[in-house]
Image (cartoon, rainbow, N blue to C red; front, side, top):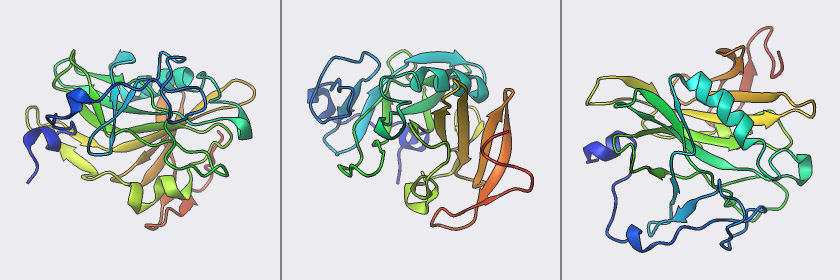
Length: 233
C-alpha cells in the first residue's frame, strides 16, 4: 500500500538520504562529481534512484509555458545541441497545488548506461523542494542532441510511469503523466514534444498549444503518425 505522499508523486524521505552528498556532475555526464555546471544538481539515493533539487525555473501557470521555457533553457546547456557529439540532460517537472503552478527541477546528466553508441540520461524519480512541500511530480523531461523524435525506448511500456493518470486527493485535480522531450534545430528553433502515458498520444508544442501528431500502437513503442501530421509543422 502506497502512502499518500507516494500517491501524489513525491518520494517519502528515508533516514539515509540526508547522508547522501549532492553530486554536481561535469559536462560529459560522467559519474564523478564536479561543480562546473550550476544547473546540474543530482543525488544518488540509497535505494539507487536519483533525486534532483528544485526549482530551477518557475512558476508557470500552464504546462505549455513550462515546456516552452524549459526547452530554451535545457537545450542551451553545454553539449545539449551538439548533434552526434552531444549529450542528454534529464529533469523532472512538477506541480504545486498551493501555488497553482508548474516548476522545472534542476538537471541530471548521469547516463542511464555506458553505451557510447546511444545518447541517454537516467531520469530522476523525486525532487527536493523545501519551498513547495506540497509538490506533485508529474513526469520527466529529457533533451535529444541529434534527433527530434522519441525513441522506441522512450515510448515503450518499460519506461511508463504508473499510475498514468491520478488525482490529487487534497484538491481532486486530475493529472496525466507526460514524458517531455526537447530538441534544438540548427536554425535555432526549439522543438518541444510530449508523450502522454495515459492516452499514449504524442503531441508537439506549436504556437503555445499541444497538437497531437501520433499515437503509440504497442508496448514496444512503435508509433503511427496521424494523417497530415509530422514531427515538423
